[in-house]
Image (cartoon, rainbow, N blue to C red; front, side):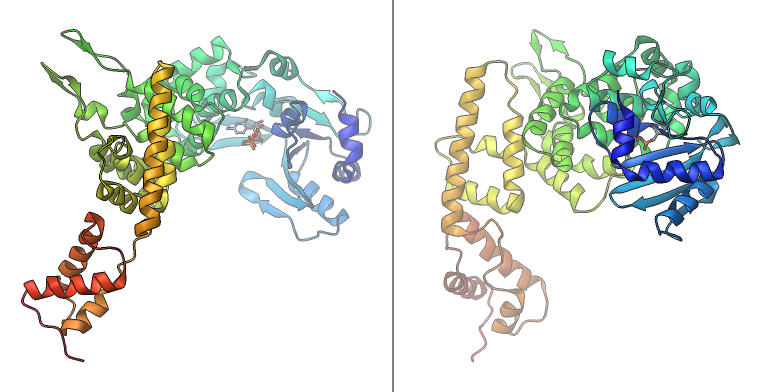
Length: 473
Ligand code: CTP
């Protein structure tokens, strides 16, 4: 691997080199940047480690670049950051760290390059490239990181028990890197994951969610989830998903394994969308199957109401996992609630009002919902899959026709509350709500069309039945 070319083609490295020379500190590019360069995934985040003060080095580099005063210093961590054109460079002094057993906060001492490499998470993240005069551009790879990149394995530089207990977040990172790079985790490193999984409890929910979301955003997220499951990491923070696993048999009736089904749906969604929240909807669409599961002598296994109960479980899961509680959560909740609705519309005899109701309930999220429903078809029988997909095409065409006619996708009441109040000289009251609701229902049911004239007429009728008289103008 030719690092000289990289260093010579990008002046930022020469600037760091000459500042390091001036300060007489040994300096290296280290970590993810080196890994990604070897993998041919160019990255703009450079981590620089020096055997001295990272902050002083950052300040001198900034001075050379005419960016004096532009260094962001994190005194507590002894690190400094500098934005230089397209590059974001982080400087740190080489460290030897030991960790306090009960927290992730390390006790930091100055150390050698070797100490610094020892304390890193994985062999592929512990490689350094020299920026020093005598061996400029040379790779320092004490743990065989290059070999592990070739073998496609995730492995810790030290005994994995030590590396993970120093910082349990690394257990999530092991799975995340395996998932992103499509690597294996070596058996001894994997055994340590299983053994130490319980230590994840000292890691904050935010950091776990961060890694989890990166796993969810990989091309084939099922792989990362299977690793989390087998390492028993998933059990630490997502018991509802673990509960999906398993097949029960009674009197010859079985049901599908909802964990593996969910993962298939997630992979299917990942093939057609990069939307993290649509992927979350796939993860959670059947989450209430375990708590709604019942056995009936004739019908076998049922999961009645799992879509409603599942939707009700979404806020609690999001809150605990420290996922956003805003419109993104509402979107996931809505998709879980609606995920069976399009299937019910596949019948030949489906009415326009059923189509209008789905349009009204799904609104702008209808396309996302249809993607989820298509992904939810996981039959092994390809003919069946094709037939279901064609049925969904039909449903979508019908929905389009209805939308063209009635425009209920972004339903705006054709007569507003204020207008109703004015028409009947009413104060804000229950009656106003009732009239508005009746108009909406009449439109969805197809009794009247979605326009102002018909809505106004209908309003007069409804109000008349309620004994209200219109104001004379
Ligand atoms: N590191 C570590 N243990 C951690 C976090 C980070 O040893 N818990 C080290 C690794 O050497 C890693 C480097 O710090 O390469 C930088 O960390 P980070 O920026 O989080 O990850 P990257 O490896 O750069 O990868 P990505 O940008 O994909 O997160």
